[in-house]
Length: 449
Image (tube, one colour):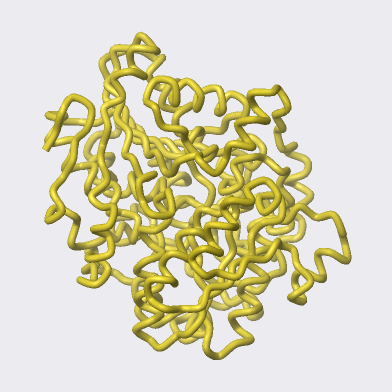
């Protein structure tokens, strides 16, 4: 079904399978390595952290993974999500381009993160897990997992990056409404947190630190498992419902080809969600652009090295090959808290390395400018993270031509008004992470060829 502004699928048209891009990669992923031995890890090494079904999905060679009926029923609370034609934004830009955005802000937690939180909670519940621990940057993932744990009757403990804990108190409150316990990270509750605070009592925290704390709590409790909201293959897999729906909606809109698919990148989950289902289209049409957009202050893809690195700061997680700024990287307190991660999903890094995905970086003030323009034109206040995709879509439209541009509106910014206040009052400043700081952080990486 479609009208002038929205293309909407029926409830029975929600995808019944997730798309697994691993078999379609031009270059196979490098194996994850044990943090102590630096040898390739197997399912048994991951069983302390994840339920076996998610471990199987992480390594599956199957191109399609069936979505459980119980998960599909919960998806129906907000899926299928609408694809919007941004007529008013096109008019404001005076462009001939046709701009579409996939609206993932309508989920219970206000972002795409619930697409993986629900199946992760489901599989853990099926295995008899009682408690889930996690980290969260801007609070979108923490909110999503809190919601999922509430549905499945699981205890949820969230370590929230301290700068976001301070900037976004209402995200913390939303998690608490759904029954989660939320800590500002780094905290004094874990050895990892205490180690960081001993070195810097005023640490703003990072996703890497929060991951270390959440992992430490999970492995010390036999009834608990750890969950991650991005980066890992099974997380990216679950998000492909976004792109699978988008492909069907573009057909309904009469679009025969797409010129650009765009999304912001922290760890890579929302980009993968909308872009991976278009991977074979990209192979068939090399002129098609898959654009991953990150902040200039945390430029993993555009300034990082393609190396083996830890996913966390302390070094508790497996080593994975990705674009990284170094696990000791301490990002500045930018307002797009969900993008403050030192690394990227190995699968996304693989596609950037093979020049299938193009990476771009922008300053936060120009992204907020784009977000305000979008809000005025389309009536939706975007999350600061999503503003990066909007900025890139606008720049792509400015290049001219009657091209088709699709971007993922990964979440709304209704809990981010303090960030918008900072921008509107002129208090928001730009920061470009210096290359020499990246080089210094990379010195701490293990030497693995």
